[in-house]
Length: 485
Image 1 (cartoon, rainbow, N blue to C red):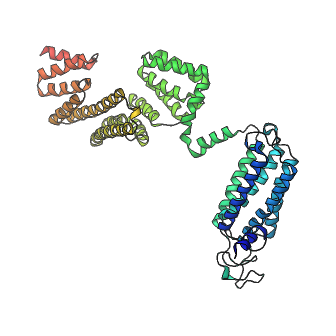
Image 2 (cartoon, helix red, strand yellow):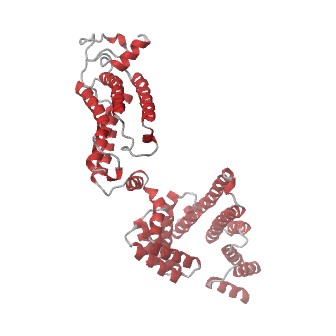
Image 3 (cartoon, one colour):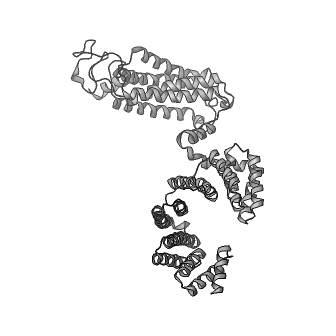
């Protein structure tokens, strides 16, 4: 087909069929021309003014009507290729004409005051246009000739007559793309209907609900803080509670967190953090039953996180409910497998339950997790040197040493309890090498020395432990024993 005949066929003929490639080429050209004409004829429509201020003059309406004809020619031939019934083409023609006429009869000057009917007059044609756009631009035509002519991708399959050379299947097949098209337009239609029928629904609230409830439930982590701060009195009580807890004034902290819960509402998730922090203060006060109740409320209200399970595990542990504590340590590790505190807490529960081999494995996992976490942070700062600070790197090193020393000390204690003092001393020496200020490691090593009869070494370790912190009752009795020898 010569170029001129091809152009006339694409933009002036309503007979025959074209494929997706031809439709996209013609559609892109017509849209480009329409935008250029609109910008030249009515520039205010592109500089933020209202639609009424940029209402097209009659001559521009006539130009748009002329531009509609080649678009109709393109689309009808594409609908023919899809073997759509003729009434579908008539619907598209009516839609195109009504879209151009409506600005002259409906007032869209003030979108804030538009009625539901006016919005529907915009939305319904838009949804129908979306249906046509997907059908024309993305769905393949029927294979072989159909009632409208030969296959444009296989012109020799039959003549463009009412009697093709091969059997014709009438009616568009329900291919997967058609289901996707109808489903997508249907979902958009439901959303539009919700906005039209529910006046209190806003785009912000709809997007927020979708992100939190459908796409990413954990998105609530990112919006919860804003909601907490929006209640100024409750937020102040919560902040006062945190400050009191940092000062180890736990009685005052509990009062502030309880007040925050009352102000937020005990059934709202904005109270979740107050419940969580109140549980820590209650445990510090020796009130584990109340702490457990607070932990349960924190988890119930959500968002559920590993550190909330970690807190509840501590409450279960204080109540000697070791199996339940172990289950919560396991849940916490599902979210944060490289958290050394979770591993070592899990090891302690396994030890309490008599699963010594599993406990030893958990302590080894603690050391491995601490190393992995440290390396991951180093890689993070290597890629972002502008964020790297000497004090932060030092904190990371100390955290790694703390966890590894703790795991070595617990392993040493466990080995001694099971009759291997040599291995116990090796592990305790490793702990002290990593953290020379680790008090429990000296206490454990002093006990190993005492049981072996090395009383002078035991005395030195007990005294060192006493220097590093206020001695508890056990350490006081150990020091008294050393004085008697």
